[in-house]
Length: 119
Image 1 (tube, rainbow, N blue to C red):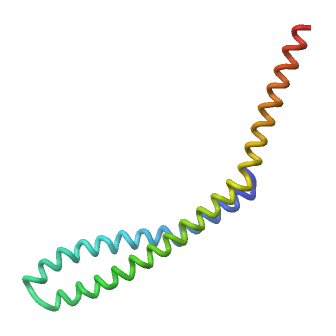
Image 2 (tube, rainbow, N blue to C red):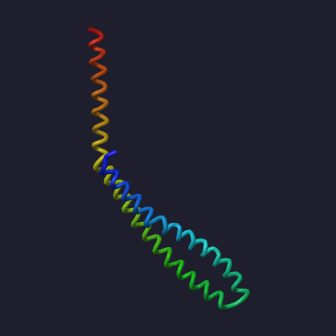
Image 3 (cartoon, rainbow, N blue to C red):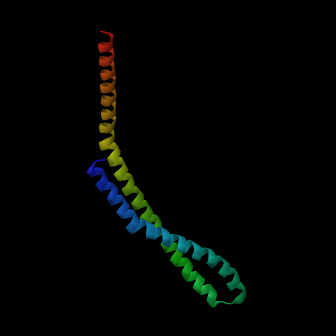
């Protein structure tokens, strides 16, 4: 691997660890909170009004959080796709060309060895 591609890969990993992973953990926490809120809502209908207010506040916080995580997810995916496409468009042609020329060189070497052996 070239140092250039290692640099971009390390940036990608750092971005994932610092930004996206904590957000994902938080989203799971909020999703679980949302599930428990649904159960609490059933309980709240039977046992009191103040519980419903608390659940409503949590629901609004959950909706805001879904938008935030979705936006961050989109930004992260597009940046990582950008890095992947950057690798593909810059390095892939070089890799393919190198592979083809090495195959051609190997075939030529085999051909030369066989020709010399026949002489």
